Length: 71
Image (tube, rainbow, N blue to C red; front, side):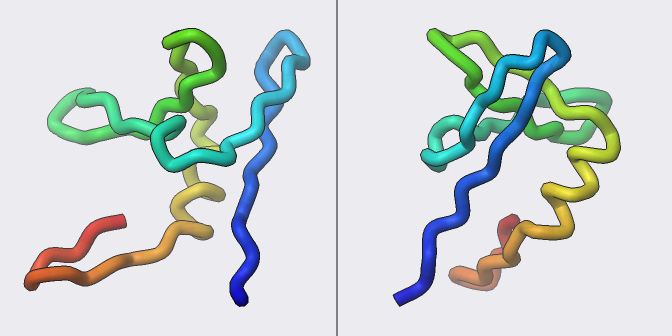
């Protein structure tokens, strides 16, 4: 059985947020792109630093369904 990945993030006020659920991560439109944002509490969303964004992309998995590839 494969383990579940849990990511831990620390914001600029030293609050720790765990990314445990798929619905915590969303994508926000920005300049014809979609950037990831995380729900930190009660519909308050935060964006990621560039280095954190790249580390997330490195750990992401590509899923191919119905001739469509998603991250």
